[in-house]
Image (tube, rainbow, N blue to C red):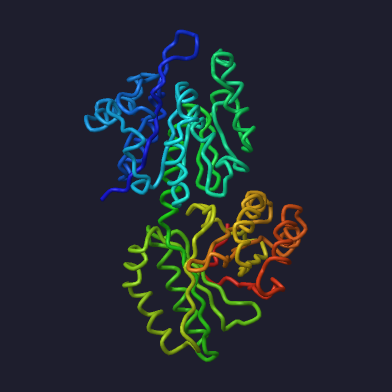
Length: 440
């Protein structure tokens, strides 16, 4: 059964009192649609009233528009959109709000659509929108009674673009201004520039020019949501350390050559060299299982039976604001004196959302530090109060800069006041990489 994505389109047909017709903007449906169906997803359509959806921007010289319009199955779907009451939110892994000026009139206040979007999001689904489609996000509320966009980086058709098309007076409101009123951190580029913002499973594009990039970002997020992220700790007998490291290095090398692999690295602990860590991410559970049938994996498994003091300790984790394969494989430079840290955090029950919110604000700033190579926060599956950070720095100086970086203060405050067993430094692991040891 194919995984499904729900596209939301408008039924509204008039641009205020201008006499001009409107509807959903064709390319804001077709360009994301093309990306997603080519990746194997099925797309359904819903509108506030159901039935035939009016079209704006009808341009069949655009090859993607033409491909969609001549597709019998999808032409049938867009001319017979479903009603909100016929939608089961559990059927969908994502929901996409297409733009067109019509979206400003009938998407924001449709309580059924906002409820569907909220359920999809809180079921770990993804929400995307492009241009005026971001109007559909305005009144989505979560179970914590906060607006979805509150505190999130959001993108949409800008006030300047609305003025440029001379509809700033005809529109029921200025979308940029209204999103800011709801607490959004609004991002934008110049007129008609492609701009896509991704923040905590919310993807927004500025204008029709951003539609394909929104589809690409949505697919990337969907792929990341299927990722298997696994940390394995091995406590090796002293007389078996060299042999086991070689087997682990061979495993990592073979993993990195597999197209299904996202990242694989192996480390020993600086203070306890017989403690080894394998950190790996794969595109899916079956991909990892298939790889574990190969020679290097079987050698490692066999060696583990006789070389370890205790059984391997395995953590499956869920990456929060996940990195792409390209970002994971970013390496230090040859001249760097790399420093890698993992920090295990066991928060007090009831504080876990505060911890995630604190990191959500700080993470983009951490990742932009000049001395940071990789920075990831993950939730340990099976216990929502447990987290682990993975922090790769170019040098100890870069790490010291990070410790004095102002955005880290709220994180340190949490670690000093809201974990079960202080001090937080007890959860710190200094790691020395021995595989793959590649450098820029």
